Image 1 (cartoon, helix red, strand yellow):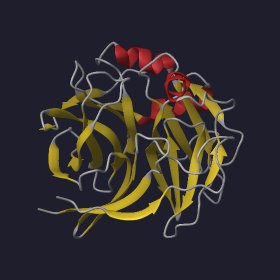
Image 2 (cartoon, helix red, strand yellow):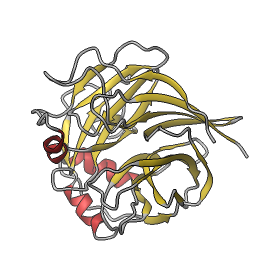
Image 3 (cartoon, one colour):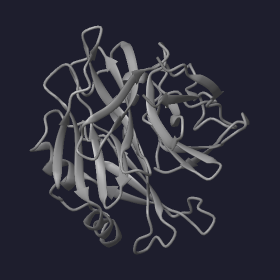
Image 4 (cartoon, one colour):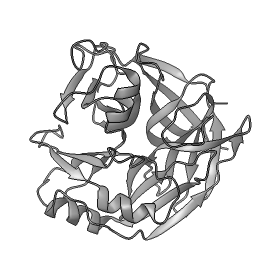
Length: 307
């Protein structure tokens, strides 16, 4: 069991809009650059920016125009459902790299991505570009069941998407693309090409209390492996939420084989992760989804120890 350490609540200096709370609640993706932590929430149109190592309220960067309904059912229906946030290397038009937020693709409104180029100080600088992921998602939906992309990462010369399994018809999968065509498509157009995966690797993470563990995020490690988070949520649908009965953090090799997996402190629904390999094991930061708009998401830390 990994004992998680609470580092901070994801409180905000100002709410996203009038009537919204002064915190993020449904944190879903995490990227770490220097001393800054960038968080996407699946029910917001903003990127949260927090300083690592302190508990000062974070700031918001709007990445999508417009507003979302306040009522939870309508908000869920209309949200872009940003579930993944990945840092991209240098490529044409982005001389210092970029951040890319990705919608899950689980419903018609959830095919948008947002490309945020970085400046020389490695901070996001506008204007942002909205990327239509529909061609990529449609091509992938022909290969996997119940499309629901929850994580994205750059692993060497590959761009990897993590497809979340559930207790219905969907299996977990690591979807590998060649990185160069992904970057070329982003540089050339605001519509992503219908790229063919290099490989789709099914991954069985097991179950907790009879519920399938499904990917929620992943991050590359320097040795060519990747760390992932997963939760067991009682639902058989990529749209409907359910009770979280367990969460784990683990490591996969580049072929999708589970090298290590351990449960985390109960009560933490981990949705976003960033990590480094250390002599003692994989040290990670993670953000949580409270599944309740009135409850702040949390930033937690843990160590997945070497065997």
